Length: 263
Image (tube, rainbow, N blue to C red):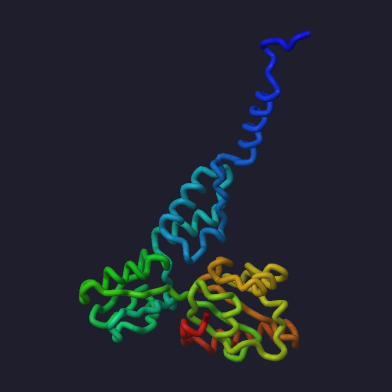
């Protein structure tokens, strides 16, 4: 008996199933067209451009269950910029030695440049600093060739010889945060190192060990200004917590690490 003309052919059935599976693979409306979900870690990447942050914001706006933490981070970055008091800017200008320096961001989120005066960094992203300062220096220099990068303020505490605050670029390896503080002391427990934000642990255990072993950068781990990297001592947690607290109190002046030494 022949196949009914109204019966779907096997090839048609396979095509229909393929369409269904493709839609399922793409996910919910928030992840259509292969868009990955946006979370807090994505939103905190220091290397992200304004276009990338806006794209993340748009994806969150159409997500079925948006990450409210990421939404807040994106809004703050796009509205207020990245640079916080205590951050830094490593600057050099070809043929203009007077500008070759590291400038620390003030409490009013400005940097003081020679011949220019205070330059506000409010609303400026880390990824925009070079083009932004090129515009600012064009007020006093003709066609300046500017090299600039933002430096984030990271606390390094615990089992290091020189605990305190350090300015490092976002593309520095996580392990470099210990190097800038003098390396590790003999009784430091590197396997128990952790990263904290506002006192809460954001990276520890296997994830921390994997990040150190793979040479992952602060940017890749979404660590930024105000975060802390700590390594405990073998003498016990109570002593470690005391050292951690005292070290931060005693090292308020920033130590600026030479960018050329970090790579």
